[in-house]
Length: 436
Image (cartoon, rainbow, N blue to C red; front, side):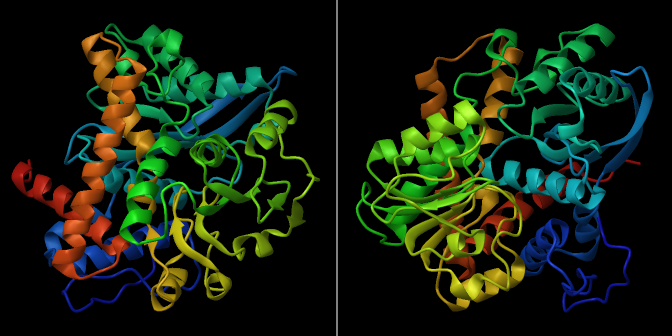
């Protein structure tokens, strides 16, 4: 996983990631890994193993378009580390996809699973194709061909496929049907995030938001932000993660004072009418441009709104070195992957604004994928109440473990999460040994 740039050895005797000339998801992930490796004293050999992907697979994805022409897309599957168990990770379909982003996402999945006590390693796959330019039939053909090219790689004991977005159940259904048609055994447990009719778990659509909610309650109490039902929250992103988080918090009595999507950012210091906004978004595919009592602000202004909690749930690098000085939130809860850059992190630490990191805060989706895998393997579906209770337990136990690490190393929450994750994976690798 190392950059092709030359690297210099640091004090621990092994090479570190180069200086951050720009802020990218890959360099963000590597900077966090490097810090954890230094703090736990990872030796040079262990470091070399953990910083590179176990396997990187590139495939061609020929697709017959609706007009009869053939278009060739690039496809990938990055398998980062299998020290804790089978690989596990999402499929991303994006015309601007970069392989470095998949490397970052696969590693994040490794650390997230280790942190949450899930016996999976991290993986990430992708098809370099613009969804907006594909018909539904063309998207289906692309997913099926990508899956067929990876027969023998994806499987319940090898690599478990999961959606990048909770509303990608159709993609998972196509992948599962393709696998089932090419394999002799049952394929259900090779794919998570499926429609309920195909063995998908209860509560999967809002799993990430439910996990964020658990961590928010624990973190707000830990940092003394105020009563459990009286927080003011700004949420960037109104989709499956941000929208569901807004709904849950509104129902609990919190004030969602800011909510945005790719089209508009809305602010109301007295609290937005979240149900009405989400109803409009469901009907029209976007938030309304004007709302009674609310003000439309720029995205730059939106992130600077005064609030108790800022939850960036949309894009990576939303909070960076150029806006971190102006953040007015009392705490940041990361709902997206890598929404706070390493440079911004340092600024926020100096300003004493705590950040609850992504691999802990947004881990609910990974936990639900694991639950679905278990249910499919045993042929027994859990009731919604059971799924919800077990999700809360996993999130709470991870939070408690991170606080113990934070006390041990006297470090930030972000450092503690990565120390805990990297240490667990390195211990598993050491126990396994090297097979020749």
